[in-house]
Image (cartoon, rainbow, N blue to C red; front, side, top):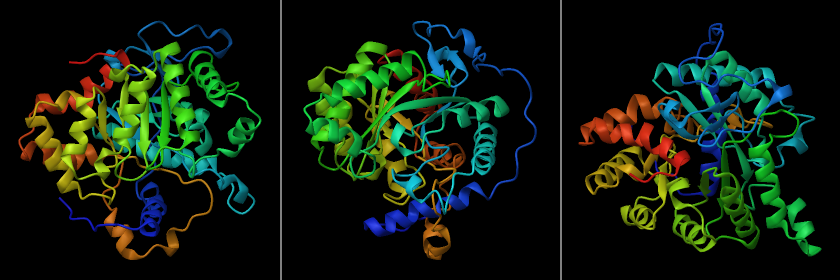
Amino acid sequence: MRKFLNANTAGFLAFLLIAAITVAGCVPPVPAASNGPGPGQAQEQDLAVIKPTPQGMVNTVLGPVSPDQLGQVLVHEHFVFSRAGWYADATVAPYDRGAAMQAGLNACLLARAAGINTVIDATPNDCGRDPELYRGLSRKTLMNIICSTGLYYEKGGAPGYWEAKAQLGQDISKMMAELFIKEIREGIGTTGIRAGVIKVASSETITPYEEAVFKAAVTAQKATGAPIITHTQGPGPGIAQADLFIREGADLKKVMIGHVSNNADIGYHQAIIERGLNVGFDQLGLNYIPDEQNVRNIADLCKRGYADRIMLSQDTVNYWLGRSLVEDAPPQVTEAISNWKIDHVARNILPALKEAGVTDAQIGKMMIDNPRNLFMGISQ
């Protein structure tokens, strides 16, 4: 497995993320898609007669599907993404949906060829989410795609709208919960596409704004049964996130603390798991902690009996919104993230885990059973 450079500065990390746009352009176009739903894929709903999601079913961008039909799941990816504010630069760098569609088609082709059946797009409302793009991708590739509702962490998202209301004494957590619930139950805007997961995020230290978002997520989870997945900014906020979910009474079986792959301390991972939550090693292929270390940690956690609490993904961005800085990235950055692709887990990480002693049954738990159980609220 490729040895990665160690990135310790925020500037270098930013370059890593921007440089990932090269991934979207390095694969061939996708051939014409077949018609009709594939095995395990939702039958697309007529937007004029959308019915309530049946209990126990999962909202995909084409309609409800049984959790048992999700197959192998990537729990945290992005078909389009940018931090809030990219739209202020849209005169110079407008959104090219055609290019985004081609990048997404390429990504879905790679993922399907590697055995992936379902992708959770973890883009929150304030970071360029495009549900109709996801619906088009699902139609063309027969990939189950699950769209998120939620808000990003304070410095990366768009808190100004909400904070202005909070300054006037309005209960923004209640308002956010209303938004999340409506997007899960009724649909996003006028698209008829229902969100299937709630995505929230926090800084290294959870801010009051972020706490309001997390409380809203728990309220929405209680109302809809939707699972919650998180972004952790930096290596350490996962435990604080877990404790906040516990205080608010969340269904912990339906919560996954994300980006634990950014922390090399297995005690950190175990502390979250022992609180009753799931963890996502979901930035594999990035350069925070070398993949070799994450493989060792995952294998060690499996040996300790925690395979039923782990999920895997890469957090890839297949189309970056706004102005590209890729031409300014130093060559070592592109080299460092050369494996940051949507099929990296399936092609490279899973074989490495097997070499480290992880069994096929344990891999099945991490890729199939645990994502399914996240939606069902089951703890094995």
